[in-house]
Length: 384
Image (cartoon, rainbow, N blue to C red; front, top):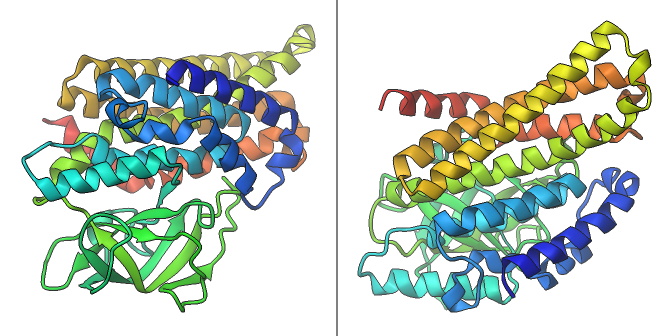
């Protein structure tokens, strides 16, 4: 099974989900059955190299087909698409990484890839209250522990508060960050979320269930880590090169999710507007024209960043992907606003898909990452 076969299966699933859109958009929770369908379709195998049973060849070859899968899913169900996209986003730290002669690192990488092939769903719960989305500002702590680790690597226990744990309850492995005892800099850890209760007895305590207006069904719960078992990233060296290598792909992956939502919204709006085009007032004509134009700009930004990644220059890839992500997040929100102006007051009803989509693209703009942190990154890379 290759990308073409997985894409065909995802297209079929997306078609089914579109037919059930009203019910799916009203959900405040995730359905395990949805993730079973995606697993059986082979989607989780994007997190492993071809030579280990997965789909991934290289960043240059695999970024486009991978992002396309999640763009298709987002057009059908934005919440499920966002949670699902965390899987390759997290595993990219192992997948798109320097390959030094570090046996322990290679052992851990192989274990991570094997888990993806076996159908283990990965996610992330790195954000902390007051951090502004900056993982370097973590206050969580990590203490070495005795025992058999659930993944190849050193076992620790973690303490601290985390939120935006998208996919809580359906993901088995969650990436996070913490500062190890006796060290000054944070690093990455993998938490075991598989079947663990949330009452604090096994290290995880639910602080608050997700109740966001946007991406309402992502189960992005807040958790308190009370000695939660975790395995440390096996790479012996600073985190920066690992994160930098994966950053362009991750930026474009989340851009694909935003764009998938916008694709569907513009397509449905076009159908509704076309039947009354002759009766549109000048203001409505202008708003639709600008909305359609901005969607086109979003598509071009995404395509430009994708071509930069395919070009193989890491600096150019990061520059383009960060700017495409920012532009699409901003333009998606303004485009949705224009569409609602043309389509009328009915879009404010919770029964309207446009009201849900509007909140979804706003949520993605604020949370992946927050605007302030995004602008910091844009400025830092603008003068290099």
